[in-house]
Length: 429
Image (cartoon, rainbow, N blue to C red; front, side):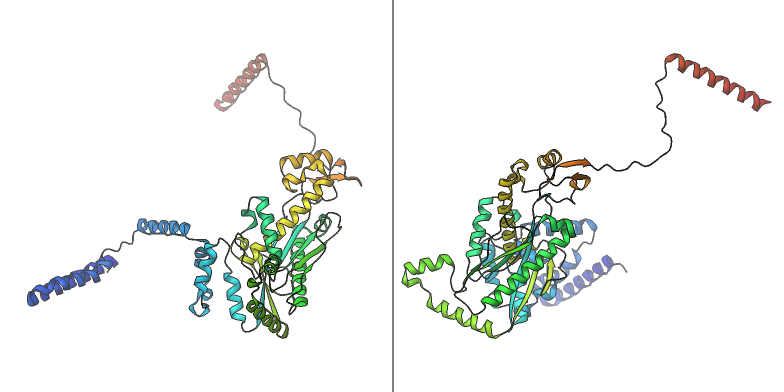
């Protein structure tokens, strides 16, 4: 029996039962009929045609487009990660507030900290900038950021450079932040390739953040700032910084002006938390943008594809990496103005490619990237000779056929006709 016939049989049985009941109970049959219809109607009206299923999928796709970023992120998570047991008190309000304030959620970070409780877990966001350019370094950034800053999204979606610079300043001045950026120069990229250089930079940045955080644990009033990234610094290096956990740099200025807004209770609570951190062991977990985890990273880690548009800490790291590299490229533009690095930031635009073919390579160009890998340079970077691929010996060169004149064409036609006649004669004989 098919599915449609079984549904139809069931509906006919229910109708007969309703008729019997109506004959004995009078006016109550209307109520029973409604109840029976409510039971039967979902099954009897269900259609299993492919057209209905496809329309259902389309409607679901439209709903997903209308959903917020956080809702889409939650839909895509595994069942174990959105289990009721993993929910934290006030978690829904927290995410609603994040969506409203236009910064990315900390979904993964919250789940990790809850599972590690009561131990102290610091989540490090890691991202890079500058893998694709033809010139300049690749910068990998790592960050521990406890403060929520409106506007923290993927750095590639923050199109205005002024907005990125402003977010960068807010991040490095926010309360209790620990950040580091590893600068891997073009020479290192050519030695080990761009992927390995990027992963190495991520490991260095994560290690610097962990060391900085452990050194400042329990020292609520101390801050740190290393020597900034500069074009004068050669080779690979790491820049880092940290702020006090009690109040941000801007908050301390405001509190000195108005004694009423000192927030003594918050300071006492923060000091107590820092003492607990100092006494207990701190665990670290890194969330990395992309699909690869560095083999030498000094803590547990996992990669998240397009994580810079899903997780707050990764997005903050992407802004640190992007702004750090852009500032370096602006300094390099002053050293090598003919390449116009300020405009394209070293990416292989048509203007940049033509400048390289004309002027050769500067010391910050990556010699293993095309078209540079097909060129030869002297010590100053000027093109000596373009390396041409060797031609394979195919044998004697074929002579080019000349265009036939009309007389030659007529003569060839006569010859072919004669050949055809002789063949016919031979076949007949």
